[in-house]
Picture (cartoon, rainbow, N blue to C red):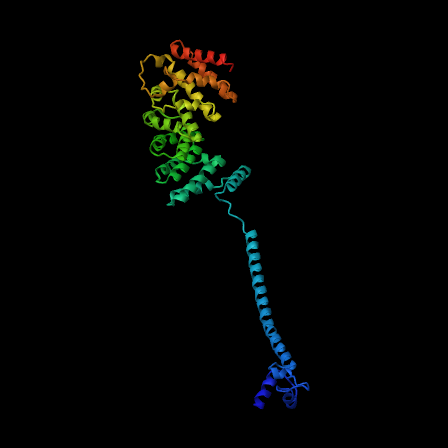
Length: 393
């Protein structure tokens, strides 16, 4: 037993002699009869100190581990910084390709060509890539880039051939509307070059078919912009008659951009004698005259007034009056020029419109309506004007 106690004390770090160990452990008492700390089962002071030394040895052993972790973290961070530095340096040294599809690079190509007088070859490269099999997104982006090049690289666009127009026109048969829209925009860009207009006119029937068969506002806008930029050939008139109801529906929709493009096309067609009756007899909604309200956007209101003026002038020509025409009750003619039409009131309200061009155009329509045969409409205008002035407006 004594030997076991001695071994335990040595393991706790006590360096005293064996006699000292035995003298102070554990069942001793003082002269007053009170037991010493050892008699209560408490470790002597030197033993407690040994326990504290053992607790301090744990962080001393963990210290080298923390140093190793710090060194590893520092090395990893330094390696990452070095790799980042190499990537940035390589990026700075690497020059971007000259021929890209971004508008900035295409504009740079245009400037370089003006400066050095040489073709970039970008437009030809894009047209060649369009011939290869591409997915929907790639075809759409290539067409979009071709459109930009045609506008910015006019000399290179003029060097294109009729086969290139045929290639772009073939994209109108694509099953995706996004590709059709980009192809229409590209054809519109080429239509600014005179030598391509006749070739692009050959696609007018297909464009009219798209308007009549697909109800998509973006497609309508792209199609109508192209048609408004071209002189429509006479062979397209039969197809135009079939598309007339669709044009009227677009005009009465709630999409301003499509409405403006549709009314511009209708105004152009109203000047053709063989299409005037088809336009006037086209069925419209009962609230068609809402297009003449002062609350409409000025751009749309102006185009609607131009359309009304051309219709009024067309129906007053001797050629048109020589025929007895019959209109259905819900026709555009009855909405604008019928006995129960309220067009006169709308026109007089527009005379005081905030926009000057709307005021002037409203007055032009009023003047065009003043013809000897239109007694009923003249009476309506006169009554409305007297009522307007009597009310102090």
